[in-house]
Image (cartoon, rainbow, N blue to C red; front, side, top):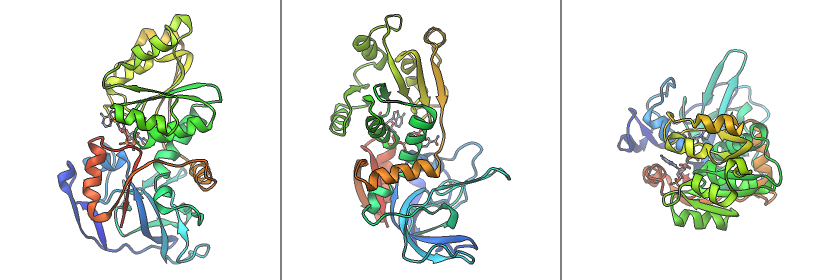
Length: 335
Ligand SMILES: NC(=O)c1ccc[n+]([C@@H]2O[C@H](COP(=O)([O-])OP(=O)(O)OC[C@H]3O[C@@H](n4cnc5c(N)ncnc54)[C@H](OP(=O)(O)O)[C@@H]3O)[C@@H](O)[C@H]2O)c1
């Protein structure tokens, strides 16, 4: 089968387009013919290599895919070839401690075919296009868990989202708006900010020209005068961490699911204790999060912005665009 793969970890130059063996589904698994694969920053981290995570080489990234069941492993009786599916990319067995993730610890969907356990399958309704569905699992699932299960956002609260132009970022903007929040979206260019207003952000901050903590202080007031926002979403960390802490109002929450800009970050200790804020970590998502997002998409309440849809032959360029921050929303690759 055709795939985008890498034989060693490294920068995008290690990526190749070519032939890889078509995977055979073991008992209890199915083979999915990939119709659309959604890219995530995780694809970049997996290709570069991450401490403590073993990637099966040659590696194929791509955890998010919409597709059609192509073949059944022995013992699979509840599913049939030809059914449209949106797999849940991760599998956790809490009793044995086993964890695997499509496109990370095992070969993923930047290919014509991938295999998943039957227990990871989710039905894809007929009215949901492959491209939109493939945008959902990692970005929208993660945003849903972070905002709702972990962050407990509620109608009327103000949510500031950093890195709002990316996959998780646009998902946070849309989901927070659907929850009845006021959304301030922060991104790295005026053009991205304009797109964020088009998808519903109430206010935007271009952090390439304006410091976010200055913006929030000037528009809401200082901490001691009741300024700041209820919830800050920060998955870029690095240099953005301390300024983002200074945007949280008294008793507010700072939510974090990643650190694209660096895992080492300065903490503003006085601000932490003066604000009595809560810092909340969030990781991954459940089948319920993914189903909730899929239901919203199927009912027309959620419309993930897609930057572009490209054929698999252009998949390497698509990954480069993601890494170079030249994307708004999601990039979808179609084998
Ligand atoms: N823990 C979990 O389970 C989980 C799940 C999903 C994602 N994540 C993490 O969440 C983060 C976002 O993922 P994503 O797939 O949404 O990525 P993405 O689509 O590439 O979006 C990331 C956005 O972050 C902004 N950004 C700020 N600083 C950056 C930097 N130093 N390098 C690159 N981009 C930077 C960029 O927007 P501007 O150019 O506008 O600044 C970019 O659009 C990643 O760190 C990812 O690993 C974690």
